[in-house]
Image (cartoon, rainbow over all chains, first blue to last red; front, side, top):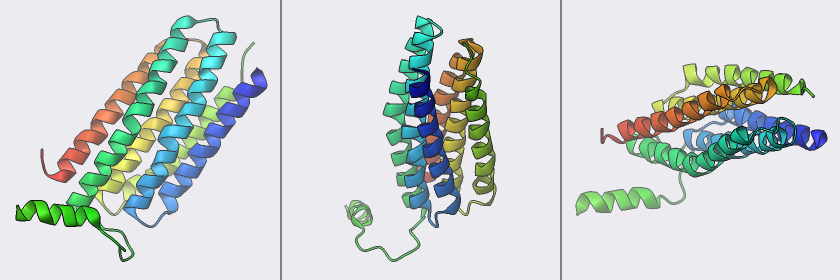
Length: 116
Length: 86
C-alpha cells in the first residue's frame, strides 16, 4: 500500500512538472491554458487519491477521507469551468494566437451576434 | 508509520510554484497572469494536502478547501473582467 501511495503522488509530481514547464515555455496564451489543465486535473487527482488511501488505511480518519473526496469532486467540476471562462475572456479581450488561424468559428459567431 | 517522503514531494510542489512566478511577472497579457495565478493556487493546495497528511491534522485540509474555492472564484471573476461584463 505504501508503494501504491508513493507511485500515485510521484505521478502527480510528474504531471505538475510537465504543466509548469508548459506554462513557462509555451509561446502563446491558449497553449499555456492547455498546459495548465495538466496541473489542475491530473496533478491534483493523484495527490487526492493517494491521500484518500493514506488517511483511510494508516490514519483511520473518516473525516479526512470525506474532505479529500469533496475536494476531488470540486476540482473535477470547477477546473474546466475556470479554464473555459479564462479562454473566452482572453479571446474577447483581444488576445490572438501567434500563428495564422486556420479557422475561427468563435470569431465568426461574435461578428454575427454584433450584426444582429 | 510516518511517511517522510510527503515532505519532499511538497517541497517539489513549492519549488514549481516559485518557478511559476517568472510567468506571473513577465507574462505578456493579463490572461497569462490569470492562468498562472490559478495554477499557483492549485500547487499551493497540493502542498497543503501533503502537509496535512504528514502531520495528521485535518485543519490544513480545511485551509486547502478554502484556498481552492477562493482560487476558482478569483479566476472566474478575472475572466468576467477581461470579457468586459463586470
